[in-house]
Length: 73
Image (cartoon, rainbow, N blue to C red; front, side):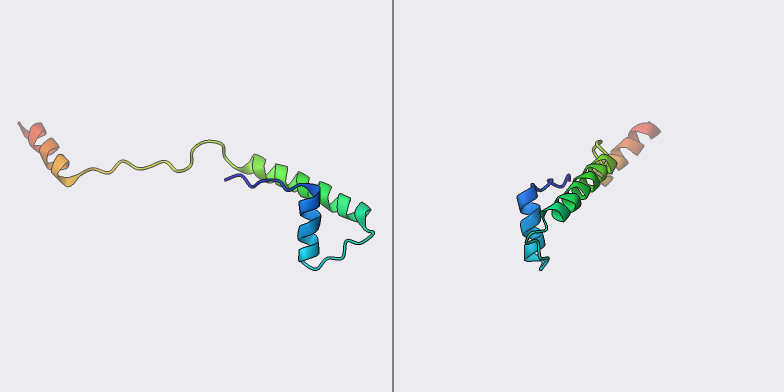
């Protein structure tokens, strides 16, 4: 599942909630946010786009017996 990329204000709020002082440090926070965007885009590109949850076909044991009986005749 692709992770949603946060907006700048949400990113900054998350930093504040984690105890990072962002007061008057907007330039540094912008740099960190730009790196976050690059990292998220790289991570999203690494995720395969094909369906990775392929189901395996299970064979019912009674169907298997019927199939073997048909082959023998």
